[in-house]
Every structure is written in C-alpha cells, then in structure tokens.
Image 1 (tube, helix red, strand yellow):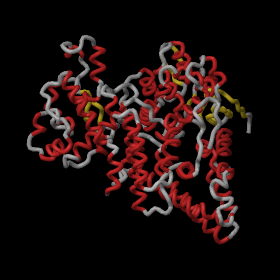
Image 2: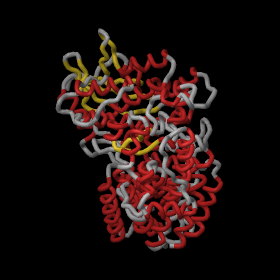
Image 3: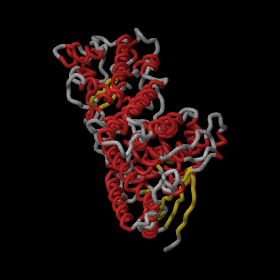
Length: 616
C-alpha cells in the first residue's frame, strides 16, 4: 500500500476551495428523514450546551466540539473522489445552504458560500461536483423551485431532505442565534479526512473500517454483559435465544432500531435524572442512556435491581432479559409499526411520527407495566399518544418549537417521570391536568398564520382538520391522500386569496398588510397540486365553483355544500361549528374562517378525548 494520509479538519478547512467528485459506481444519496433529523438534533444539542444568549460572537471559539467521523478519499488526476462519507457531506452541504439562506449579514453569508461552491467565470461549481445534481443545488441555493418529478433518485432525495431541514431545523436557533450556530458549525465541527492515492488502497481502508465485523455495537456489549452474569447454563441459553429473537424482530423494522428500543425502554422505566438546562451541566441518566446505554446499565446495577432484588444475581440478570427487555421491546415493536402505518385505534401514534416526534417512544412506554393485560396497554397507548398529539398541535398553532432538543427536558421531567407505571384512570387525569395547565391553547393565538418555517406542520393540521369534518359527516377517510406532499398526486397548502394585493386595496392600504392577512390559516385550504396550477391565480369568485368539486372544507365555501347533505348538516348541528357559505371572500369572511378553523382544531385536539378513553 502506498502513502496514506489522515488529517483532522474542521468543516471550514475540509470544504474551503475543495471539490469532491463521486464515481459512477457510487451509490445514490439515500439518507432518509430520520438520519437528517438526528444530525440536526445532535448538532443543535451540542451547540446549546455551550451557547447562552448575550454571548459575544468570539465566545464561540471556546464552545464544545463535535466529531462527524471520517471520510475516505481517493485522489487521482488531481481530483478527490469520495469513497466513504458522501451521505454526510451531501447532508452537510444542504445544511450550509439552508443556513446561508437564513443569515442576513453579507459577511456571514459570504463565509458559508465559500464552503458551498466556488465561482469561476460567473458560474457556480459546487463542492460536491456531480453534474446531475448541480441544477438542483443551484435552485436550492437561490431559493427557486425545482420540479422533483422525473429526477434521478439522488436529486429527488436531495430535494426532500432539504425540505426536512426547513421543517425540522430548531426554531430557537433561527434569528439571533443563527450566526453563532453557523460559526460553531464551520469551526468546531470536525472530520478526519483519510486520503489514499488509488482506489484499491482507499477501498482497502474502507473495508478494514467497516466490513470485518470486529467492532461490537452497544447492543452486542449489553448482551454480553447480561449473559455473562447468568451462571445457569440452561437459563443463559434460553435468555440468549430470547435476546436474539427480539433483536432480529427489531432489526426488521430498520437500521439501529434495536438500540433505539433499548434506549426507549431504559429511559421510560429506569432513568431518574437528565442534564440540567444550563451551560456546563453534565450528562445524567437520560443523556447517558442515549450515548452509552451498555455502560449505563453496568454502572447502575442496583438501580436496575441487578445487585440485590431478593433473588440471586444470576436470576436477576436472566429476569431483565426474559421479562423486562422482552416485554418492553415487544411493545416498542408494536408502537413502531403503528408509527409507520395507520393502525385502527392507534392513529395518533402515526400522526406523532409524521411530526417526527421521536420522543414519543419512551413516553408511550413509560406507563406500561408487565402486569397490564393487552387491552389495558392499548388504552394507555391511546391516551398517551392523544396527549402528545394535542401538545404538538397546540405548540405548532402558537409557533412553539417541537424539536427534540427543545422538548426533551420537559418531556422527561414533567411527563415520563409523572406517568411512569401509572394506572389507567390516574394516567388520563394526570395528562389532562397537564394540558389544562398549558398557557398556550388554540384560543391564545387568533392570528395563526403560515410563515417560512411552518409549511409542513400547517399541511398536517389542514389534513387532520379536513379529514375530521369529512369523517364526522359520514364520508370515508382520505387522510392518507391529503397528507401526501410529493408527486403528481400530492396536495399543497393553497391560499383562497390569490397573491394580488391590488385586488384588495379597498381593505388593505399596504401590500404588506394584505400579505400578513393572506397567510392566516383561515385563508388556507389543502388542495391537489393540479388545482393550484390551474386555478390558483384566479379571483375568488372565479374559483368558487371549482372549490365545490374538492374536499368538504373547500366545498363549504360554496352554497351548494349546504344542500342535500344530511351528514354535513348533522355535523354542524352536533358540534355547533359556524360553517356558512361565502359568495365573496373579504376580510370579514377570512376572520370568520379563522374562527371556524380554531373551533375545528379544538374538537380534533380536545383533552376530553383522553378521559373519553376511560369510558370505552
């Protein structure tokens, strides 16, 4: 093997003036939402450990550091070809583009632009130099739309993952903290760049690091530790088989699901502490389980009942596999399947997963007891999932962040610890009390509107609200259709008012006033993409007849919706929802729809639903 070099580099030194090519035989960019969101959450959490509002920008130099792993490069003919690390570099570039679009200072934008592309003869050349991706990257950098249909797999996935960054980037890092975060990202986040000078050497390194199976995962190490302490050979073999079968079932769900299940189990049942929300605070139970659960178990034998629980040590170690791990991993598996697919009775788990609320898994497991029968467990899951669903919807309506780093402290301290092992009625009462204690409800924000950061959450709210009034009117559920965003048959958030302030000068003196009102939720509908393309720019009076051919929330604008529809009439009578037709759509009409939507939201996300579960 010829010369191989490895250098530690921060993001700035890795990307400044560099070009990385990808050979034709490399796989496509295939990171999914989970990987992008986890990267953002990890980076945000590490940054927040050091950052305090009011800090001078120069203080960022002393903030904590974060290691993003190694990348392997084959350098030939003066070009760098990525052998390993394409997924992370592509994702990092998308994050840099997003930050570049958020920053306001030209100096701040300039330092990021230098890491995203180089400019030669007026043409941008991106650091990941892939011909088929360049038009897409150009559009993202300039903030222009780019049609995803018919694009190569990597291009289509890049567009969707950038949308994920827009939707899930923590709101509390936008605005004033954004330049600090950008500084930290390019200066304090590091890679190791390993460079070989032939493909053969580069792939030898790659195989050595990844393919020999010598590295044990935390799951492997926990298994070895637990089994080593079971002295009865027959029982150890039985526990080993149980462990193997459960891990295999979890891995069928997806990559790293076995580790995620163990983290959720331990956090839900055994964690007692979490890192305090102050600069310099040390990791505690909740945090350590997330990074090194095998060590945490070994260091907390007494807390887990492994040291002295009235039975022999060997039996205690067998019990934690045969009873605890088997029970909680089984229900984690059930929950994850419900998260991926709409499951009758557990729909809220799916809704929460679509909001990417990964914290729901330890919260859902927290009240479960091995002594509970299946019917009781399912009722507990429905109650907790409904609580989370309401909490998320209220926070979205009040422009509050729902990302992992923002929510984890209170969800652990106030919810997981508060509902752990609770019986059914007490569980419902505790969670309803928590909801009733919340300051922000749907009524606390009568100006809720669409802005640059909440497009996807508003799409979800409208899908749920539209589906609610249709199913309550006796129609079949079309939620799975409404929630789809991509593709030719996807749905979009559509404004009732077209973007023509000159049509509304009788009520709005300035276009900015019109624009603010136009974005209020009362002016929004969820409609097929084809509708917006065909009718979106028309005046309201010209669109009204076309609305009648769409979903019931759109139809309700038209007077014909109130003729000969007993299901819709029954809904209005039973709920008192103030539906009425609108032959014109003026400011007062929009105000009326704003109030209507709020009332629909209060029915969809009603805390009474938790108590109603007790009566079923």
